[in-house]
Image (cartoon, rainbow, N blue to C red):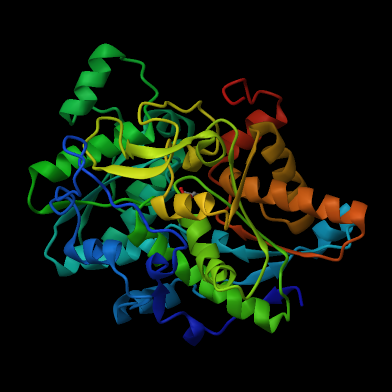
Length: 433
Ligand SMILES: *Cc1c(COP(=O)(O)O)cnc(C)c1O
């Protein structure tokens, strides 16, 4: 079987919440001043997602309207076998990949965007503000808000804004309002621009700007596309479908792989499988892959830090490179975040998952091999997972092991062609180590 599909009525009816199953207690967000558990979150987020954030219910019902939209725009996504890639590598390993690239917005991110926009609408919110790195989250939220009939303001990291002009067009087509961050809309932005007019921006700064706007207007709420528990939760539709599809294919993979920025793609595709590992039902390797230029999980410290640059957010305990870290301008813009989901951090700390980092040059090489075997031009972010899948398949060739490898193809790269162009012309630059 090269393609394993599920009928649309097999779209999950619930999200899986890993909170009650975490092997170590999840440290709570704290206030930076007094170190006490915070109360400042509520003003900026919708009530529904705040409840989900701390919920200890293992399964949370997906609202009917949200599930229907999932179905209408393509869920469940297919699982493919990368047979041509296997043959090219001449490996005894089998390689499967889950197709989140088939989402109309180009990545997995719509799974949470539509849930967040739905709750905002229901609570009478008129506008959501957010940040976006490479533009995938902004595209997803702009579409979700448009479907729900509310406004969407997107603060896009300036370097990506310049590198990816067509992302802006996508967001504007979906009726989003896009600002290059740092911008002069906010005090934070104006302050940074005054000190450093050529500042490339960072996700941390864009988050600060989006939060500032939400703090100032009652009808405006803030929406985050990664890191927090409720975002991980919404993405678990991917992993639940994946489990069913692997059962149909009669596979019990040895190795699971997904790329990580703030954690939502990894969490969403892996949590249902991680539950099986925590429960002792399987003993697979579960690998999170990040860029060597933003190595929070592999080289960061596990400590309390702010989610944004200015320190507006409460402090989260996570693997972090420091909230003032400005990542080099690599093309995998979606992975340039200084911190990591607190839940994913706990799983790493507990040794349930493994983390690896890869260099930008290697990911484009892997991406090109994938494009020429499986025909899909993958997102640079997703190519981190592809690179490790190829490494594992090559190892299997050496040992002769007939293992099964699965990775999540989190998005396509058709709006990342500048990265490909730079790679093909040998101009990726030295930005990334
Ligand atoms: C955003 C994004 C990621 C990373 O998601 P995180 O939640 O930050 O880990 C991976 N792949 C693609 C295509 C993305 O758009």
